[in-house]
Image (tube, rainbow, N blue to C red):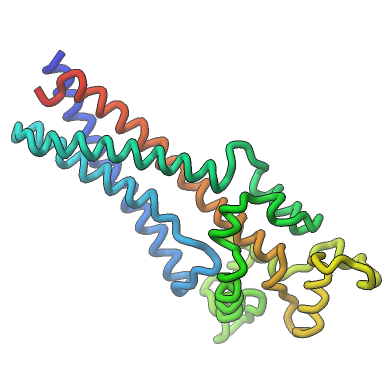
Length: 265
């Protein structure tokens, strides 16, 4: 059993090394492209870094595990086991964090955004308080507004003044939430004849005031719909990379199993 486990552990670690290098390279390219296209502006998105740290941990553990097998040094084997346990704890922490921020059962991201944007649903009814505090709390929103104004998100023009290189950047699915929530008044607001008696928390009132003060470009960066756009974009970012935790969990479980069966013997 020891020889069998040793061979399969070696092959598993070689595969893990190659796979983690590939996923790290893919992640670095994705982040680099976003940094270049956003000109280091983070109001549109918040870089999700935990997959990078997780894949780095997997890569280092694989290298140490292979050195432990080839060199038969207990120190490398001990570090490998230690990093595997750290990886398991890290994955559990990520899962707990996701439950606190996004909830166990939640509406689809698009549906939560639509409730705020079209139906004026309060943010705290569609999103967890921890997510709101992290991405759209009052103390940080002035900086987000300033950033959106700097990139002229709702004011893009063709020619030399164009901030982004892509001609269709506004209608990319990635920015669709921002384009609707921050730049296009909800359909129901167009049907409001009089603003008298309207609730002061209604987004239509904010949209009306924003449009009157800035008639050239329709935008409302302080509206709940714009805040919901940032929350929805962040949720989408997190959902895109959740497979990393699943891949890492499967890899660490099988690697630990081979070690238990005598992979280092």
